[in-house]
Image: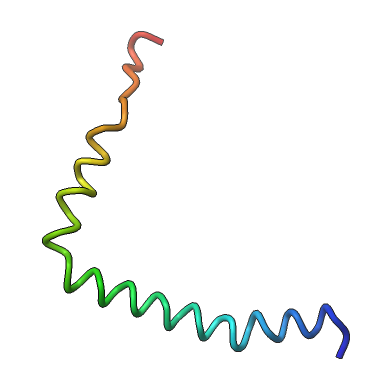
Length: 56
């Protein structure tokens, strides 16, 4: 197995599995803390300046 093949094997095996595991952990955290997280999330969107397209 050459270096490129080894990297592809790692990406499709152990790395992919770890990524799925981490996403599951994030999902569980969100479910537990949703009520705390949502207001800050919404406020972050409200703080984004909106461009008035009619003035462009």
